Amino acid sequence: MPLLGPSMKRRGPRTAWTVAALVAAAAGLSACAYSYDDGLPPLGERSTPSSAPPAQTLRPLPAPAATDPPLRDWTPDMVASWAEAALPDQKGLSFGFGYGIVLEGEPVVSSSAVPAGTITLEYECRGGPAAHLSLELGGMAVVDADYACGQVWVRTFVAPQDSVADVTSSAVAGSAAAYVYRVVKR
Picture 1 (tube, rainbow, N blue to C red):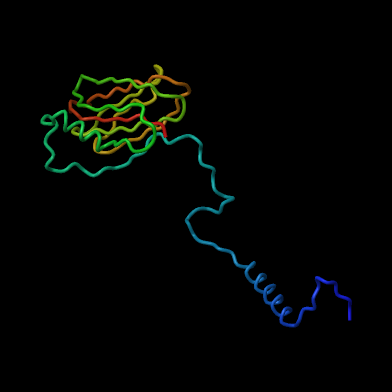
Picture 2 (picture 1 turned 30 degrees about the vertical axis):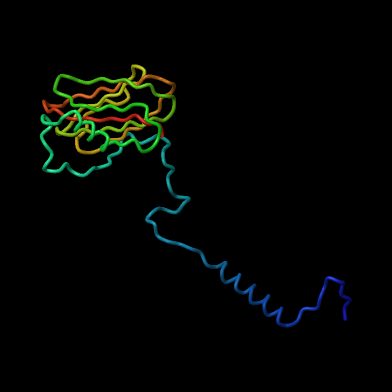
């Protein structure tokens, strides 16, 4: 019989069976692999997304109620209430918030100081089929397009340094529109 040290004990057949069962279970489990079909190519074959932020994102809103009064009957309180509900100040640090009613040939310009970094412009209009929005950052056009009313448009851009953002809202094709915008850093 071999000599056993003080910390060594003789193991019985029960221990041998337990070790054999664990080794067999480990070998069986190592052959299993979790897999599922997510519709994407395997990890090594996927393309890397670009680091550029999306140009614009559409976030549809419910259609206005049929009982809404025509835009010409809106009071300043109604415009303010709609603007707060359309673009609530929920996330991020807001650097600019503007709203009102624009008429053909009467654009509304407002300015906001924005810090360097990634900035998000949210915009919505209501009342007409579309409205025009432009944003200049330090005299350079960043956004300049017509947007369909009744949905929130989101545009992300990068301010290379602290600057002033000039936001211009205007009516399109003779249709007055209520507008609201928010400039946010998230």
